Length: 433
Image (cartoon, rainbow, N blue to C red):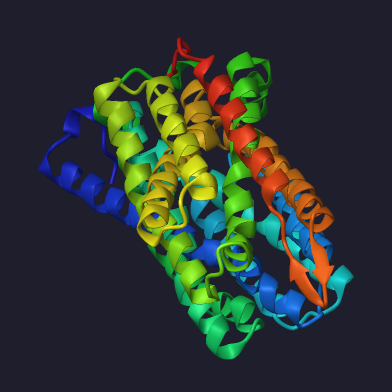
């Protein structure tokens, strides 16, 4: 079916609605489930330490390997994703990560676990750029914040599933199930995503999104993809966003990676109770991510900096309550909820959307990959630094480990404050259509 701009009508609208819904369902649920293949290590740290399989520092090495792999994977795959159909790249990422997790559930060797977890990070780096390309293919600039916010909520879905459902599986079946269960689940998810996702309106015989929405586009300035991608290296605001994202990811993955252990050892909660607090954090994150998209689109006319500052202030205040507030279950629950909502909004914006707004069309995946390198280098460095700070301040008293997280907590909160200030420095940055 050959459709032109003059042929718009009820049939075209219906096709757009149907396929846009399919795209959002596929990338949101698919990305949510792939997260369960990323976070298993966070759940099984205490069983692995208590079982004498790995030390705290060795777990830090394995955890860092995921982030180094993801940083390189997101950069390389970000650039490749501008050439490969999103449907292929996205579903392949889920399937390959699922296979790695199944093998991870059989490993008790440090070198093998480090290698597998690094490989997992690399193939997971295929998913986000292809998902964001799907958004820019199917949604206009003034819809992008909302759609990106909904998609970004998917990481909260995955974290919630991991920190509560997978934690319950691990409590019942042991640490190996923390890897094998999401692996088996995601093989089926990969097949569903491949069958459900659609690449772009033009592949379905529809006009491109700018024509359909009657918005200005860069269609008349089209040039070779690599030349377009190179533009992002000369945009200073994208460099600032990348560094701000790296610092924000320090705190994000510090809480994800070490939060369960902190709640178990410092606050005295069980694995399931600790997992519940992290699950509350991620459930609130769904609302926070979606709210960020609507607030930045509707209240600030697709400007991200004002919303960035509001969400960053809430995040820092919530962290102060989590780590320095009273030991009260209700207060802790509310603090984790506020932290999760605020952080998810920042992950949506500083972690990608803001850079995508600034980058030229045709370099969406490259912009995501560029910011992703910095983000996950920050996460990887965090893993090593946090493990070192926790291990160096841990004491062994009559064969009982006594943990001290104070130095690590100062490191985590400090990076969030600096990230907030960097993002705020881009207050007057203009977006591109």
